[in-house]
Image (cartoon, rainbow, N blue to C red; front, side, top):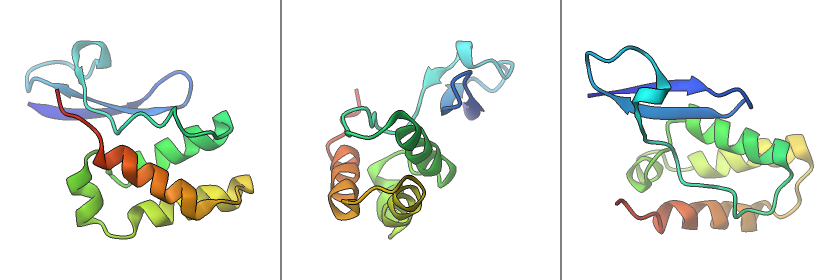
Length: 105
């Protein structure tokens, strides 16, 4: 099994799990993306950039967040500066809670 990362037509970075002998086709894979951030009240462009930044930093599970201390803060700060977001502390807490509460099914 292996991970395959790609960018969809809307500009979102995605990741799927493929069998070793499968071609690099996202349609064949099992989604293995980061938590769904859609519950955050952000403009679409800021939400996509936050998602892509977290994906580039390989923050997919709570264990990744723990291993990379400060990665959520850095990602949120980068996006907040670029998109003039004001409540960075609240956003950081909300993103961390999405990772913590994520259920693996």
